[in-house]
Length: 394
Figure (spheres, rainbow, N blue to C red):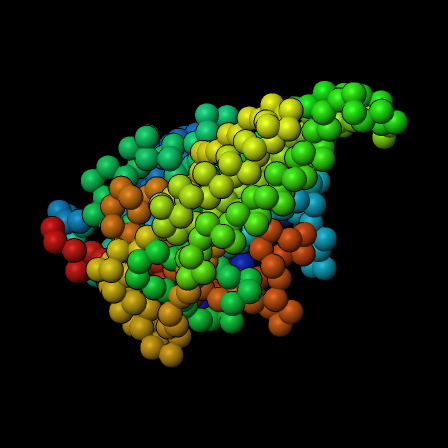
């Protein structure tokens, strides 16, 4: 409770940071200004700071003697969406906005840094090291097919880490409530691309060609039907087509159609069957004269919370916000590259409700949050790190 009271005392500062970042959003691996804000704040608080980690990432460490290393992560990137704002801190970049709350995550981690620095100054920080990870590009991969978490891992950001935690504000969840669970909490995801090649012909004489558009449509329908029959009704899996492009003129049979989409799963065996379904649904089109290419990946694995780490964080939530704030989380088909960090060390990822009276959906042009949760998020990250330092073996 004391951490939350301390964070409440600088609530206005956290709001100012969040709104500044909201006005100046940056896409994945372009977060130079955002990284500068984070690095400058951490350095001023006495953290040892490294910049340019994995591209535009920032690693900031605060230690007090020997002990475990606890990593606390916040993602920094925005999305290529034009904001439709009804507030005075709208994005100043055309076609780019913080539509998923990463500005709030960064501000919250800066707030957590302030709390942790205060504890060390008072000689109240447990022995060990807190390592803050300001991570680029959670929303997607770079040209090398790797996300920000993967690149930061390759750059050594997770070396020696005993446990890792992170949070996500929920624009759809009741404000001030904390949602946490053991085991699989977010889905694995992989993007896919499909090319269906036929041969062009005059629309008046379709028998002279192979209609890639009609065949591609058959593949889409077959894939959707096959998912309903390849999976047990008690299993969870999704295949979604997001884009389709093809054809050159209204009176010419399309000779090439390109489709893109995503598949989601919790169980690796479900992932295998979804890929087989996708490949089979379009592969059958070759018997009708098409040439088909299906490419799946790369993607993110499921986010799996470690029971022990989640248990410690559950206790920290009760200490910081009270037992009435804690709710069980239900598995989500959304994906998160925090999954890679949680593969390097036992991890826990949780949600903090931040819904406005009119909740805003993530990845929408009107997304926004209730900023009153910023002190809570900062206190939870700091409190979770302190609790882990106390509970983990040296």
